[in-house]
Amino acid sequence: MQSAYTVLILLTLVSLSKLLGRMIPLPVPLPLLQIAAGALLAWPTLGLHVALDPELFLFLFLPPLLFADGWRMPKRELWRLRGPVVGLAVGLVLFTVVGAGYFIHWLLPSIALPVAFALAAVLSPTDAVAVSAITQDRLPRPLMHMLQGEALMNDASGLVTFKFALAAAITGVFSLAEASVTFVLVALGGLAVGVALSWLVGRLRAWMIAQGWDDPATHVVFMLLLPFAAYVLAERLGASGILSAVAAGMMQSWLDLLPRQTSTRLLNRSVWSLLEFAFNGLIFLLLGLQLPDIVKAVASHETSLWPTLAYRCLDVLAIFVVLVVLRFIWVQSVWRAIGAWRRWRGKSALVMVPSARSCWLLTLGGVRGAVTLAGVMSVPLLIGVGQAFPERDLLIFIAAGVILLSLVCACVTLPLLLRGVDKSPDERLHQEVQDAWRRTAEAAIHALEGEEVVDAAAPQDATQATLATELKARLMAEYRAELDRYEDTAEARAVAQQMDALERRLRLHALRAQRLELYRLLRQREIGDEVVRQVLGELDMSEANLGPIK
Image 1 (cartoon, rainbow, N blue to C red):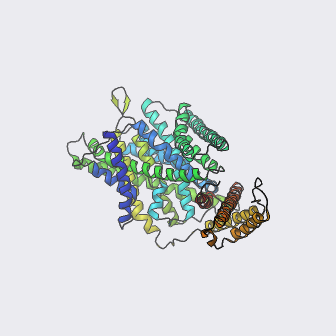
Image 2 (spheres, one colour):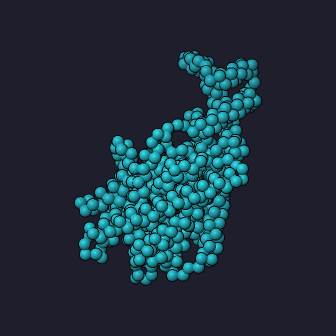
Image 3 (cartoon, helix red, strand yellow):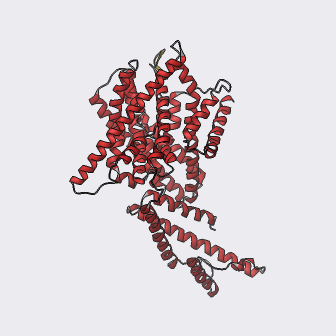
C-alpha cells in the first residue's frame, strides 16, 4: 500500500504544480517547480523517499516519451531542415561526447574516460518542450522546428552513444571501428523494427475496423502498448529500443489517418496528452526527491559538507559552460558552412540568414530535460558482483546540476534575446490552413452534389425527394430556421426526425469527403503535419458532435 500512496501523492503534486505555475506571475518553467516540489517532499520533515530501479526507470519512462516525440514531430519541416537537424542531432552529439568527455575526465580524474564519455553523451539530448514553454511560442518557427527536430533525433543518438560508452566502461573493452559498425547496425535495426511493428499494428487496426471492431478504448490500448513493445522487441533482437520507439511513433502518425476512427483519434490525443504530462512531471519530481540523497552521497566521503558541495557546484558550472561553448562553436560553424555551401550551389538560404541573435537562441535553446535525467538514472548500481558503479552519485549530481543550470539560464537569457521580437503568427502556416479549409470545403460540396440522400431501400415518393433537395440547399448554405422541430403534431415530429436523420447523414458524408481531401493534400506534400493536425482535429470534433448515425 505504501507504493500506491506514493504514486498517488506524486500524481497529485504533478497536477498541483501545473496550477501553481499559472498562479506565479514570473515565467518559471514547470520542470523547475516540480524539482523544487520533489526536494521539498524529500526534506527531513516530510521524509518521502523513493527507491529507483535503474532498468525499470529507463523502461517505464523513455519509450512512451520518445514515441510521443516521434508522433508529434512535423515531418515535412524535419525533411526540409534535414541538413541542420542532422548536424545538430548527430554531429553535435559526437562533438560534445569527445570535447566534453575529455574535459570532464581532466576536471575530475576520478571519473574514468569511458564513464566521462557516457556522461557527456547523456548530457547531449535537449528538451524542445521546455524551450517552447519558456519562450511562450515567440521563437521564430524555423528555429523552433530545428530545435524540435534536434530534440527528437538527439534523444536517440545521445542515448545510443551513452549505452555504448557505458558498455565500454563496464567491460573495459572498446574498439572505435567495431563500435562504429555496431552503432550503424543497431541504429538501422532499431529503426526497421519500429517501422515494421508500427505498420503491422496499423494493418491489424485497419482489419479490426473493417470487421466492425472499432471500439476506441481497444485501439487506444494498442497505442499505449506499442512503444513498450517496440522497445522490448528491438532490445531482444540486439537493436536499439530507443530508436525503435521513435520510429514507431513517426510511423504511427501516418497510420493515425486511418478512416472511420474519429472517436479513437479524439480519445487517443487526450490519453497521450495526459500520459506525456504525467510522465514528464513524474521524472522531474523524482529528481527533486533524489536531490537530498544525491547531495549527501556526493559529500559522504568528505569531512565537511559545504566546502565539498561548493566545489562540486563549481565543477557543474564549469561543465555547463563547456557544453554551451561547444554548442555555440558547432552552431556558428555548421550553420554558416551550410549557408556558404548553398550559396556556392546557387540556392537560396534554407531557413534564415544566421545572425548573432539566432545563433545564441539556438545555443541557449539547448535545454536539458527529462531524457537526460531518465538516461543518467539508468546507470546501473553495480558494475560487477559486489562492486558499485564508480562515481554513480557524482554522475547523477552533475546531470541534475546541468539540467537546473540550463533551465535557469534559458529562463533568464531567452526572453532577453527575444525582446523586440513580435509574437506574430506564422503567415505561411496560416495560409496553408486557410487553403486546406478551402480545398476540403470544395470537396465536401462536390460530394454533396453527387450524394444520393434518399434511402434506396425505402419507398420512393415526391415528398421525400423534395425534402432531400431542400435539405441539401440548407446544409450547403449553413443557415435555415428550425422551428418545425417544436411542432406538437405527430406528423410534424416525424418529418422533423426524418429531416434530422438526413441532415446528419449529409453532414457525415461531407466531413468524410473533407477528410479524404485533407489526406490527399498531405500525401502530395501540399500541406504539413501541423496543418493536418489542426484541421483534422476540428473535423473530428464536428463528426463527434453528430453522435451515432443510424
